[in-house]
Image (tube, rainbow over all chains, first blue to last red; front, side):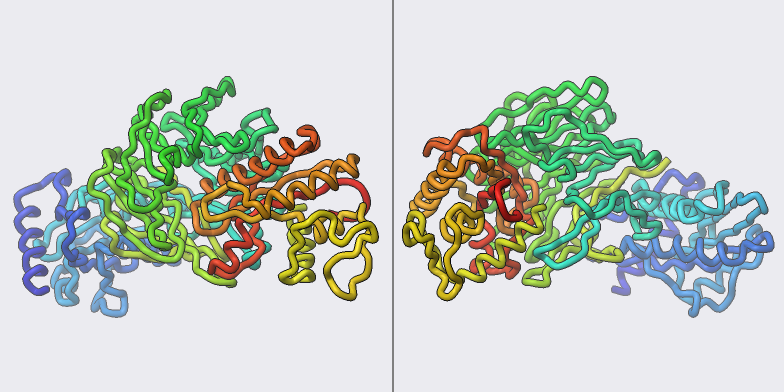
Length: 442
Length: 166
């Protein structure tokens, strides 16, 4: 433990002194590695309020930055109660001994100013306390006071990315299904929130069953399954206008499991024709559909690769439900899952390198990941029901829902990182399921 | 709509207890049912269809094949429906909670389609039938053991129209 700390400090000194630009990551945190990651102790004192009226935001923004960093499991907070001094002048060099004495290795300083027209400016600097040097340049963000959380997330994203070399993911949203009521009379409605649970809004009422909502790449449109017209059908919802429309005019067959293509121009989904369920692609401009699979089995939960050239899906054409990959135009599909249980809900990582999935074996559910050829399968979780993973924008964290057993069983949304560490529950006002993680907001 | 049906069916199942009549039209012309003390049920009523004939067939895990008992019940359903041809039906397919959501939706549809295909082959006009799947969304029984799961793996023939509420 002490040896690791020494190693981290040594790395901080060596890299920081050798590099002046902020392009090289401070720490190559091997998020794929099996070893224990020693979290970096970081202090984020209250930001300096540079105008009257910025006092509350200067505390709130610093708190969200710290919360984002700590939520990754890669950073450990040196809490405000332990600090022996604060930052009063954003432009002055910090007194590094104030921070090394409380065992901080990284320090974030910031400043906030507000104006009467609702504008907000947030600035931050990041320091290596051990090397007593800045890590990269300071950055200034300007926006509206109502978007203060997004600005705090952007600050945290930049810090995270400088230290880990990975792109950040905090400035993102989750769309999911909010659930209430007993197990045999569950009410469902669509909801959207920041990745950390803030700013929750409901998108529909609970008068019809709604399932599995997914963001479009533009983060404004949602596609989902709803029973509002009788049969389960695929609907589009524009979150800005609130306008909803059924995707396909055909009302004789059931349609489910829709997802957008990476360029947002197409939707891939399952259409149920009696005993046969196949995957179809629908062009959003023409609403023309083309059939991509024609096995006699159940082919469902398709997901595009991030370059749009391939689709991974689940099928029981071979007897048990397994994962298959085919070209986005359909045609021959090759199986990638290795069997020994059943696999479903595959989702291709935004990095293109891995596929996450639900695995059911021996009466237990697991969230797992595998390489896109099916190799290196790794199960990250286990419980009564863990289902339906969704990737963070940087492909390093997964959210999913976990449902408890029994008559009072109910679902909640959880997150876990790619190595299976840092399992956490996402706090929501009621039960929650079917999360989908947006890209980083623009 | 589905919720009220579920409540009604739940009440019906509880009223009958373990009593399952796989035979045809119960005890004959008088319309006597098996539940002691509940009196005669009018043979043309939905209650008769739901409780005396039985509106629900069950399935094995991940399966949509019909057992012999299921087929016998469906034969009785066809006879009743052809005796009272003013009714249309919706077959609801369901699954237990042991699978993923979308697969269970498709599995429920497979079960509903299996029932539909059997009813058509047994002489019911296809235009009187529609199917829907609820996957694992509408469980009848809420415990997480086979005792409840077996009840949830079902297809329910919901009769519309005529007298009485569905």
